[in-house]
Amino acid sequence: MPELDAVHVGDRLPAEHVTLHQGDLVRYAGASGDFNPLHWDPAVAAQVSPTGGVIAHGMLAMGHVSRLVTAWAGGPEHLRELGAAFRAPAPVGATLELGGEVVAVDPEERTATLRVWATLPDGAGVVDPRRSRAVVALG
Amino acid sequence: MGHTYRSFTYEVSREKLREYARATGVHDPALEADASEVPLRSLTAPPTFAACFSVGVLDQIIADPELGAHWNLLHGSQAFRFARPVRGGDVLRCTPRITDLTSRASMERLTLVVEAVEADTGEPVVEADSTILFLTGAAQEDAAPEDPAQQGSTRQGPVQGGAA
View 1 (cartoon, each protein chain N blue to C red):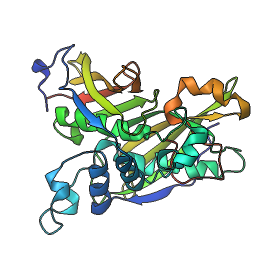
View 2: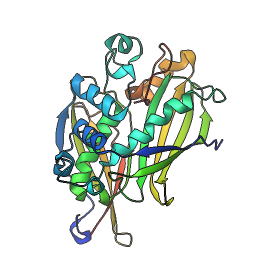
View 3: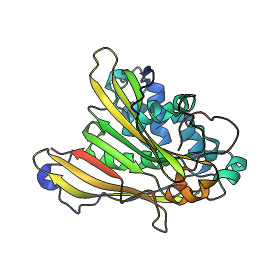
View 4: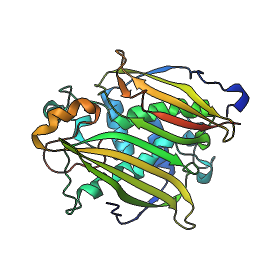
């Protein structure tokens, strides 16, 4: 868990990239119980998807963001809150940049608030950086 | 609003934790270890594991005839507030309730909160907020730019699981 004195507004988590393949979406569907065919059936996706094709679960992108934040926090037990606003669709095969940045430190509560994101190469927020936040307990 | 749905019990199993961790790229040696080496109670769930007993409640909501909901929906946002992390062996009492239902021009926005507490003590564990946008008929195109990522379905009948 990061120490209060060592965390400053503007600190950035080491960015990561993850590519979401069809198999990853199928795996997430099974793990989470979310079998919406939008995430695995091209025929359904052709009718209802904004991209015309299969897109990733927003929760899958949020899960990867969660992984990044949890690693920085030192474990799930240090995560107080995690919130994601889903915006841009992530097509199958898309590579997401995962990131986070400290936007506030509360010395009384000993917490850091981070804005977090999962973005497409053009910057579009699958997990929207403007409205997605994590609150982490500090040491 | 404020309609509360029937509570259900969710048991956190080793295999489900492992499956969820792998699906989200989490490499936790404790979750990967054999059951003979690491006790179930020492396992900690990845934070978004809570989706398994919150986002997945949507099918219960959809099935509520009084609500008149349908599967043409978007998952707008998701938030988790943790009193403590979810752990292996937890038996959670989960209570879904609708806290807000707002009509807009082309959609209805529903806020669903699932409160998960320890089944035996009632101690809070995690609260999950889901914002779901139910699109109304032909207005689907209008709503898509707001949250195209979680475009739902106009297709045949209910699907299992959540919106996104």
